[in-house]
Amino acid sequence: MALQRGSLGFSTMIGAGTTVSVLTVGSAQTCYVKSILLYNHSSTSVNNVKVHFVENAGGSAGVANSENLLARIGLQADDTFFFEPAYPITLTSNGDTIQVYNEGTVAANTNVLVLGDKEV
Image (cartoon, rainbow, N blue to C red):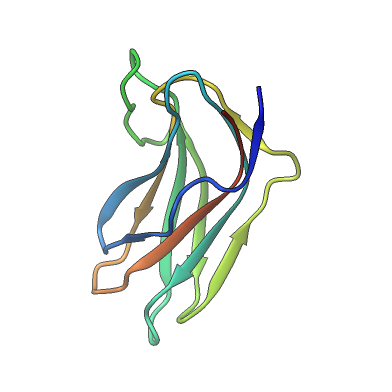
C-alpha cells in the first residue's frame, strides 16, 4: 500500500462544551498519527481540552470516556500547543476515531489539526 503523508484532514473548530471526532479511520485504511495541533481562540481565558483515542464499537465510532482519554491539555489564551507522541499512534480499524472535548464554558473555540500518514 502507498503511504500518503501530511495532514489527515482539515482543521476542525470545536465549540465550548462540545466533543468532536477530528479523525475517523475509513474502510481498509491505517492512520499513523504523528501530532495534533491545538489552538485556543480566546484572547482572555485558559481553555482545557481532552484528547481521546477511541476504538470502534462494532465498526461504528465508539464513545469518548475516561478509558480512552490520552491527554488533558490546558491552552493559554491565544496559544497553540503541539501534542507529539515519541512514536506515531496507529489507528487500524474502520471507525476508530480521535475525539477532542473542549471543556470551555464560554465562547472559547479550539481549532484542531491532526497530522500524520495514512495508507491508501
